Length: 89
Image (cartoon, rainbow, N blue to C red; front, side, top):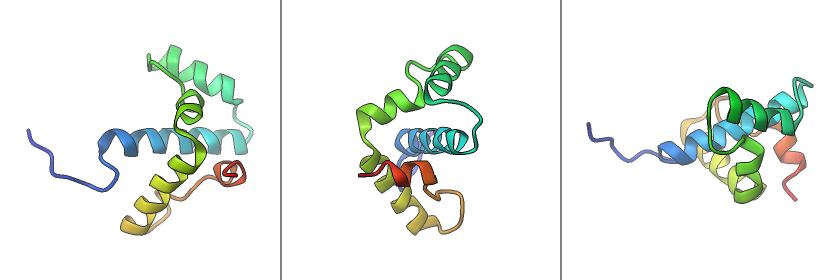
């Protein structure tokens, strides 16, 4: 099945959302970044955890993708986590 081009593409959008949700989990006191990474690697069998991806990608890159998605789709779905906003600089 062919997919049409979409803003953020599939992998980029998915990784940005995983990182954003993990950052929200830290903000809400659910877990630490290390625990989020372990949970995603051990529980879901991802090759890296969200904060390992974030370290490689950089906060400005993730925030840029989320901001662009939010501008295109409008709504709360792609709102940048307060944790990411604080760590942007």
